[in-house]
Length: 579
Image: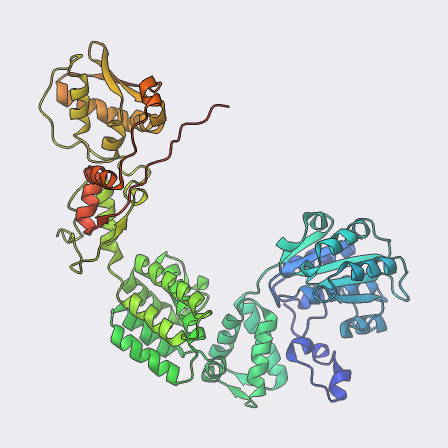
């Protein structure tokens, strides 16, 4: 990255001499490709295109706000029209370069897509395209926020955009390329501008502060860079606010006062209270921060950023991936993160995210923030809940925690949770389930085939029970060979039982029931005619709940979570339709 030249600060000298103040973002706008911060890949590609005489007729610059799209468009225009050009390094001294820099060149037209978005404006543009430039080499149209053009305006531009006159170049800039029709995108060379790294923003702000004669602490300038979230223009606007205070000594406390954010020590103390589940101390810390002038909205954003960085550290990432905390806070943040745990950290992040959405629509920001903090303090130990669910899926009725003690079946608060069939029946919840204790042995005969099958299925406690018992009939087709018949509407049940690991366990269960090795097969049959003609009346809601409550997995879920079964949804028929 090149050091900002003094020419940048004097580029708008005419306005400054006339008494008009020129903002920092304009005074220090990059004037060459080498001064574009954080966009080296774009700069190199455009310079190579000019050097090899491969300049296209239409370019599309996309990216977030303040990353250099319009600045790059102006630099490209100067590189093409410079008196010594086309050149990858415009001189910035000739009359054309200076007029492009000031935005007053007659052959480089900057158009605001938001205010010139209609078909009439594009028709006017088309009629002017054929007019040759008055003094420059190319007539260049820079359309900012081009995605704001109407569909009719885009359609009117298509033909001209595809085959413009040789003296015309188009440069489109947008923050929302998804709104641009694909027919326009296919006619442009697209360059995506990335967000600018905080370190690059820090270097640039330090250069500007030095030229402006201001002294700013490293911690303060890093805070401004993180607050800008990858936007160079935003960071320069924040720095200008600090310079407007009139102080030549800018500290991190001054930045916090201007932004309405909490100091790092205050925020660290509050997060420690959250980790220790101390809701009272947490609310007192929040009250102290708000009394210092901190706004609830920015404070919530700070909390959300800290929990994001805690999640990153818990996943084993280094301090270089921290976006909201300085590297010096890594050790303290890691300690608090491990106190929270990954599950609770993610749950707290979701609570804060939902609160941020609600705060934008409510005038009770403080109340909502306090509610969110108390909810985080009251989060249960998600590790124990995860272990309980894992044990439940394996068909074990009494899950235990890491200390070997049984997990309580009730919270003691009498809270009942609504359960439906989707919550009780995961897709394949018991692939490793072992059959329950052995049943009494039964001789396998034609008359006992169904009894043997039911006895074998009863040895399981997972989804095998529900799927296997939906059979239509059982028959002995050969010595020690049992066939189970399913109606075609139960194709998914047959498929479940035929899975290799499931099929093997069912044959093991049959061997324990009969005392002999049994070959097991499954087959689909047509639904019986009388069943088709006279469909069975649908079970009432009470009957559905009663039948579902008798299932082993449902029963264990109810006992474990002290829950109440409220509704049962029958699974959809997964039989593929014949074409």
